[in-house]
Image 1 (cartoon, protein in one colour):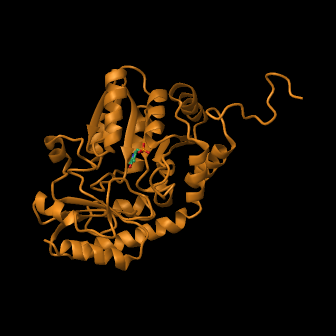
Image 2 (cartoon, helix red, strand yellow):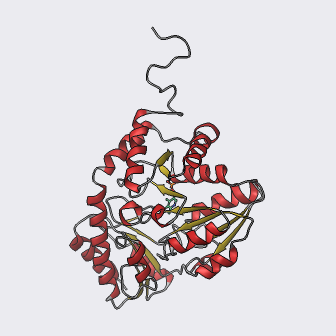
Image 3 (spheres, helix red, strand yellow):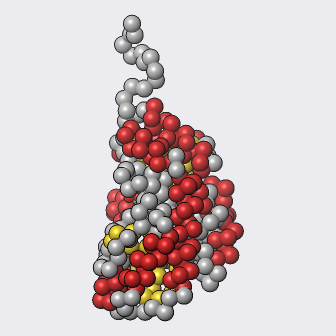
Length: 352
Ligand SMILES: *Cc1c(COP(=O)(O)O)cnc(C)c1O
């Protein structure tokens, strides 16, 4: 018989430790080339745990102005309103802007590459050098690229965060997040905040679903990318399309950087129609194979109108400053047969 206070397997209570979660964390760490992984109840829970374990009241934070909208809301509520920190947003496609924003007070530098929905990149290694000059913790949100196409720890990031809700689980049936790092103290700090302060650890069933999704991860990512490349080239030649944003296209302003720091260009494409906002919304009503929805990273193709959907939390002025027009469309390209996706795009665009 066990005595009180003794454990026969090391697992006392699932919020603190669970064998299925341990397997998932080990696998995600392996995939990312990280020493440690901490799984969270969502990407947002993972980001909150990082913020709470790294940022002190009054700190200075530098962030890419193209980061995920939910990250901006989290920074506003948690860092600015609750902790009295200052967050400075910069156009990180320009490394001089990052270098100018970083000061001796900067404790956190937060990047995301490529960004949503305009697919802008930042030079991960050069930002690492800038963050290192002031000893700031350097975080990269790698949700869009995934470890299949990009491993920011190899480019000097201290912490990488993903929403596993997207490509890593890949089936739109689970929410989760993960924090990856080589630094034991950082991992312990995030795990502690996660377990004891937020209570945002990932439920075992979601760990199981994500492990199951990971079995086809490389197959899915390869197909997302070949489909996205094909659709991007099709759109690039379409007379009703004014501009296509996809890092895999030669004319993307950071195509060379994408080739250097990524092993592929991912599954998200956005494009500007030569149309009014009303005409654009009418086109979006025409899709049959693509589903009109936000989110991304599942096997099914989704189409999104950022101005009224994924970026609707922004004011008109903020949207304009961010370069998100009423005629911008984002597609999260799935793993269906490319011909079905091309035919669907073709018939929807014919409505113009
Ligand atoms: C979805 C997303 C998040 C937030 O993840 P949740 O799992 O929805 O909390 C963070 N960053 C990026 C880039 C995302 O796409």
